[in-house]
Length: 231
Image (cartoon, rainbow, N blue to C red; front, side):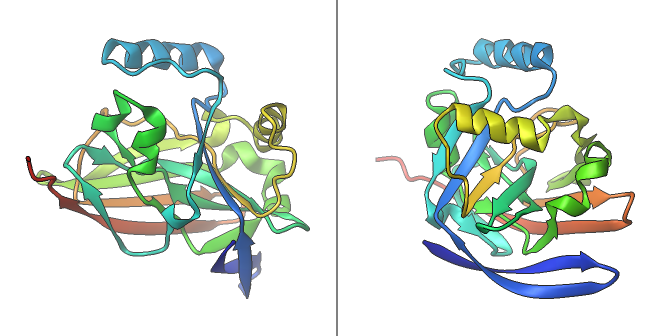
């Protein structure tokens, strides 16, 4: 188990602190709602050497140690990038949602997607919403991210959640794949399209906006590249 300290936004300006016990971390890949676009993306990746997944969506379990709330992460090599994703968590009583980044090594991804996910930390925001507070307007929530590289800062992703599997459909898929008990599990949802393809920057900012209740969960981190020395 890994204990994480988070803040629950209860609405109307009220918040409470919680300590959650996390037993598992799951990253979902190919979690798009439109299966034709998912298949198109799979074929595009095949062209650059990425093998197709064995299931759709694909599930990539991660180590508990991959979760981080730090304002910087360290990666090996310069071809890594973040992915803004909604993140689910059930504490054994109810579901919560926040935003995270499935930072991934794009060079390793061509050889082994599981290893490409494991190669990078998984940043997570510390502010959570109750899922029941946003379920009725779920598709109106918006994921965004910004990248900063040597040309400056710019938007990298922006899409409402119609691009991704709805919560209950995603959870049903996980149960189909054998994840019967999802309590105490951090679930990264899969991401929305980038605006310009992969960009390898020095800073990644990401957010989940609720335009109906007029609130945002936002976080950011810098990316420190540790070049691997040649033997």
